[in-house]
Every structure is written in C-alpha cells, then in structure tokens.
Length: 353
Image 1 (spheres, helix red, strand yellow):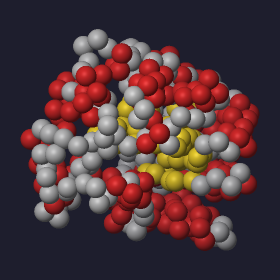
Image 2 (cartoon, helix red, strand yellow):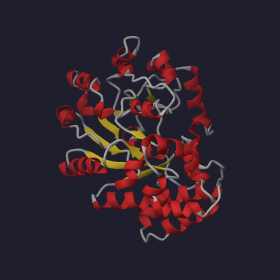
Image 3 (spheres, rainbow, N blue to C red):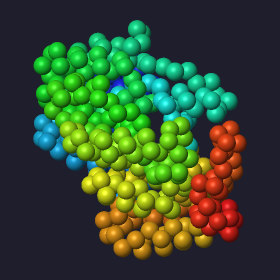
C-alpha cells in the first residue's frame, strides 16, 4: 500500500517499472487524488474496516510515525516524486513456516506446500532498477521499513545500510524491522549505531507452546531469550506487532501480559490472509466466549486495544471451518491443534461451524 510519501518498493508492479517511475504513475496519481477528494480508496479497505470499528489502523499508526514530516509535504502535488519512506521486502528467505504465512513470503513453507517456492532476493537482481532509483531519491528518504521473509537473515541489505553511511545520510534516517525474533543480530550493531533510530518490531502472536504451533520452526525459548536480550540491551526501540487470527484471539491477553512484564508495547493488527483463519469464521458461541473472556481481563488498556477486533468479529460472519484448514498442515508438521490449545479446542468442539 502506497501513500503520498511512501511506497512498497517490492510490490510486483513496482519491480516492473522501478519505484521512482511507479510513484509518479497514473495509477498512483489517481490514488492520491482520491485521498484529496475525501474518498476512501478500496485498496485501503483493511484500514477502513478497523477504523470503522473504532480501532487504530496502520494508516493512523503511520501518521503518528511520520508526524515530524507532515508539514514538509505538498499534498496537492499528486505528481511529486518525493519519497520519505521506503518499505523494502528483501526476499522470502525465512526460517519459520508460520500458519498465517505462505511460500510466497517464506522459503521454509515449501516443505509443507504443493506450490513450488523459489528463494529470491530481488534487491540484488541485476535486472532490477533498485540501486539506480535509490540514488535518485536517497537524500529525501527519512524512514525505511525492512520486512521479508526474515530480514535479519538477509546479508545483502548491509550494502544498502553501508550506502547511506558512506554518503553521510544515515544520521537522518530511521530503520524499522519486522522480525520474527529468532535472530539476535549483533553483527548489524555497528551499522545500526550510525542511524538516527532503529526499531525492532517482533512479529509474535502468542507465547510458549502456542507460539511454536503458530510460528512453526523455532523453540519458544530461543525467541524468548532474544526478545529479552534486545529489551535489556536498551540500545534500540523494541515492541511487538501481533496479528489477530482465529488461532490466537482467545489467548491474546497472554502475549499482552508477557510484553507488559518486559515494559514493551503491543500493536494488534487484523489478519488479511489466509481468510480461513479470520476471526469472523468462528462459531457464534465461541465468539461470545472470546468476547466475555477478553472484556473481563480487568485491564482497560488491553481492552482498548482489542475492542475494535471484538466488534469486527461479532458483526461479520463467514463459513470457513478453520480446523479443517489446519488439519492438512497438522499432518505434515506432526502437530495437533487440540494438543496445543486444549481449553480452546474443547470450547470449539462444543459448537458447529
């Protein structure tokens, strides 16, 4: 999703045309004009859904991130080539096969999918215009988001960091990493220390055994150790980014409590895909139990964070049986949903999809 001052440089259309040309394309001009006209572009449906339910969407959170630059932008110039934020998905190399992911975003998923997964790193692709485009806009960039795959497994992005360091630009740039928490990246500290700010946002949706089911591939103890070590170091900003799905919503307070003991914030986001794991698929009786459990946590800050998702869950309905969806992967991974979520499974078993 692109806004007036940012772009996902790894989106397929962007890779084809180059991100500088795409940002000024007719398609992007039309999108910017819709915002100026007070319309709600359909590309942003996920944010509108959360906001309509009274929640904080990615759009609102991003406005907070870029608040220092909001008066530096000429919003009326829809042809402006100025880019402040780059969202860079480095490739699909990843050491986890998360239940909410796919081979497109995780190379490890190929072990559990009939679809062929090819590990790729398009930043170093010789046919890409990435480096040429980067040089054109490098003096304007203020914020870079790295995702993957798992970005801390990627070696090539050190060249990108070094480019900004060598050109005396790093001191004005903030870095944000969406990481699964499995890598303690002390090999990057010498680079990070030359940037304005570094933020690590841990993509973790649950803790302990249930983490190992949802984010399959690494023991929870290793992730727990890394998260605590980053937190104790105090060198970088760290927080949690958790995706709300049918798997974890019932126990979402567990992650919140874990983060709270570490003094870290949690941002909850609504799952987009796979739709089979959406909270709107849950049986009505299960939805009622989840609502009751979460609203009686006696923690108003937590309730404020999840209220909009409760509203979405209770006001929309689909008919996917997510247990059927999980069964094939359970067989391939040697896991059983009922063993990892005994209380929740018992609750679901009493209802009908």
